[in-house]
Length: 230
Image (cartoon, rainbow, N blue to C red; front, side, top):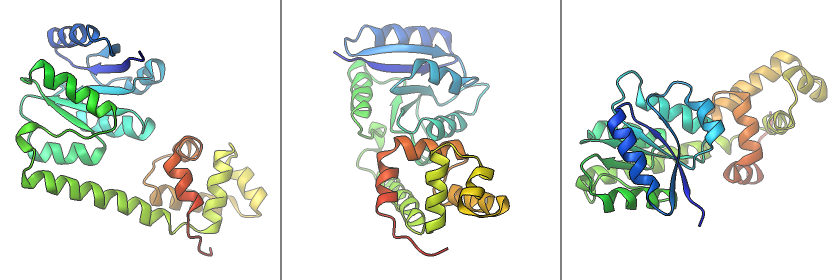
């Protein structure tokens, strides 16, 4: 049986060790790595390649929301579950928008704890039980739908030139090389890259290349793009 590879981020050592031992007793789970804060988290993720992150919402020395954003930008396929005693609605809203798939309250029973991990690993979203069926749940769902729609709408306004630039970035070409290939100035290419980053809500050209190579949704978006002139 293939085990769910988990990265645990928890700054309380007793909790970290206890949660880790509890997870490793499950036949379908394995704690690939543990860390007390978010420092060097991206490097750790490259090494351990977790399918899922368990993250303490209230880290003392790090902003958990920023950790979520960084992880989802670099590793969009990795699922994230946030742990907290009683997460505030405002926190839940922000974390869901940042890409969190599930929430576990720290007084949850064993069954709910493991069930949440398994459901999120399968691609489902799990809100705290006290919010299930509430008006707030509907608001979160609506926010997610609007967010996804916004990304798609931006991407379908891609110009022919922008698509060419994306494909060349994915091939590993630098801006100067792209400029020479497309008979453009380097400044014009930089401008296209800036527009692409904004439309696809990305931060670096490396992310553009990674999405072009690895993301099925990105490939489908490009394939179905309604191209407009420059």
